[in-house]
Image: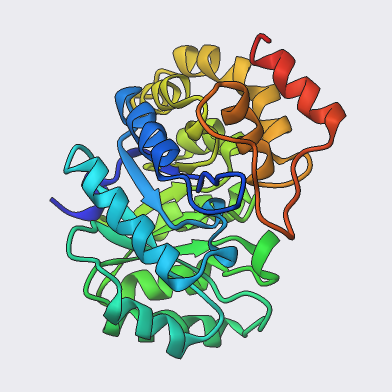
Amino acid sequence: MNIREQLKGTGVAIVTPFNEDESVDFTALGKLIDFIISNGVEYVVSLGTTGETPTLDKQEKLDIVNFTFDKVNGRVPVVVGIGGNSTKEVIKQLQTYPLQKAAAVLSASPYYNKPSQEGIFQHYKSLAAASPKPIILYNVPGRTGRNMEATTTLRLAHEVANIAGIKEAGNNISQCMQILRDRPDNFLVVSGDDDLVLPELACGIDGVISVAANCYPKEFSAMVRAGLQFDFTTAKKLNDPLLEVYNLLFTENNPAGVKAFLYEMGLIKNIVRLPVTPLSESVQQKVKALCGK
């Protein structure tokens, strides 16, 4: 089974729960993994940026990914996030992290450096050559400061072995449509913009790596499955109640928004690591009201 078939549907960029002393709360992480799998998501993404990976040290990352493999226990595929703005350092991580049980590696385009399109191409070409698992590109210019243009994505897709797909979070449906039109047949294209998933499904994407599916896995993954079947009447009915959720998730910060929802649902403690701070009290009250409390 290729990556496009294996990772069709909804993946969850899972948060990292913390205790009051900001240590990783593995009990809550286990509870959250069970919650999202039992509610129908197709796969889990460990160590995505929603997991606050910029604030995790190396040992914490290793402990989290090993715990996730053990807890998931083969029930769904696991994708591991490994990215950064030093190509050399990312290659080192690809060669030393425990990836034997991973379906693929999700790697964000380099941030802050603002490389040219050729620099982005050469970065991913180097990662693909070094990685023991297929690489899923991650374009998120709102965080990295540089858009990976459709021509660069397609060049990687057609020319570089071991580049298996892209998480496209450019907030640009036109760019997504160009990738979908010209991609190789087995090249995975998933959304990274929860609020655009419904229209992007109509354009032909294969699914999503979602933030919202942490807290609404049943409703969100059902919406995606309906869209993949081109049943947009059902998909819209499922998506409409989530519109305010999307707004609150990202109104101040991700993952402060999703952690606020998970806290109100009784799944985790409402703790983030600096420089991220919890939602303001006024927004937290809106989350609480939406959760029916």
